[in-house]
Amino acid sequence: MDYMSVVQKEMQLNTEEISELKSFMERLISESQKEGIHFSESRKIAVAAHYISLIRRLKAGECLPEMDLSAVESQLDGKIMDIALKSAEPIFSKYNLDVDEREVILIATHIGAAKEEQNKSEINSLEEGKL
Image (cartoon, rainbow, N blue to C red):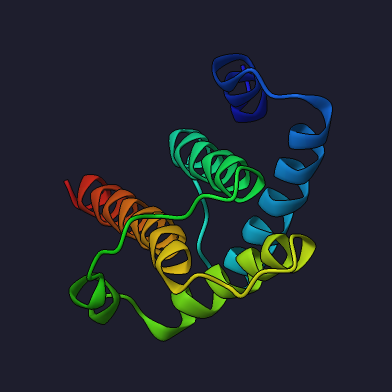
């Protein structure tokens, strides 16, 4: 079962949410691949679930609680932040809202986690090849 089917079933997505999610994920994956970052299926599920929660918060006029994410942001590569921003801007624009930097940082953590998973997988493959 692909990640979209899992998210659609688990989060009971409507047609509009499915369309928005597909668009977001295509942007995110495309921008990430330009930097050599690839997402596992489980990472796609995690970021897709986050994005649907973001859409639902925006539709309900809600936002994340105040929190200091500066320590998290300082750990993230600038390119990863750029990918997250490019991916998030269209949804905020759709709802005529300023981009919430906290949301961008949280999306960036998913991208960073995907990069870390990929790096670990590559290291494991290299180590296995040496044995």
